[in-house]
Length: 68
Length: 343
Image (cartoon, rainbow over all chains, first blue to last red; front, side):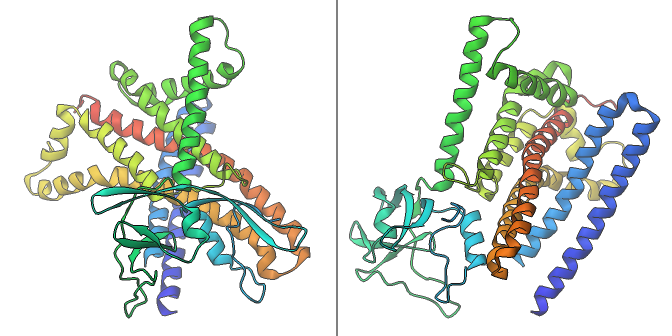
């Protein structure tokens, strides 16, 4: 029970980190799209790639929590 | 009537549904393909499932069985001079009684034969291969017959997708002169992952397997990506990886190991990302459906069905998004490894 709750707390911290990261990506992508709508396609691609990399870290956490 | 995702026999004696066993049974592989459970006129519960071929390698020769022999009998099957039983989807070599030995931690100590069976996931992969090949071969025949005429039917669906992979993913990330060489690989990745994600979302018989949420499946794709990234690496890429030009001498001791580990973490991250996304999606949908059985109330059913419908729609987005991200990141890494350095 002890380890389970620690795992849950750790996962919570990871999710907070990933949420901050992805929200900052989304925020800055929206800002730059409104500044330069003509390259919004490129910004969107870069945004998805960066979000995927951050999401990867969060999923690493889930898998580690699974194994722990 | 229960959904095919609800593998056979997950009811305890008090009539409760074993939710955990049910979900694990769905997301893991199995040696038979469960279709439906129903109660017939005589009040008997029938577990209808498709038996799959079991192929075991023991004492240097292959052994063939139907998985029915293991699910519907309590006597062990013979394998050469020994006997074999199926316990929790793993085969164990036993004595003629079919009993397995446990150690003090409750793990089974019997030896296992090498298992090359056509499991549910493998059967599902064959299905997707037939689907993809028939789609693309008929589209290719269409182009051979009609040439550059405006595409119709299936070709009209596939052409924008293929062009998207070629123009946005491959040519967008990889140098112009090298991009086309990688287009077949990237197209295969994209459509194989996407179609398998979609088959996994179909809740009844020919779908419902968790193939793209299987770690071996994503690991195999990631190994292919690893070779595609590194076998075609340019001289600058390897120089950059192993000598880290332009940084102070002491920093090199730090940077070269990091770059070297980075060779393996990139495909590893691809593997984990696809596996965890698809498996998590399946678990969430099943958890929402099984809320009815956990709370034991009919009134929760509309809420549960509505939520799982919304999740299912989200999973349709995730299916294409994960296929796109896997292909996109592979193309990005290939682009990084094949390009000539500008520094």
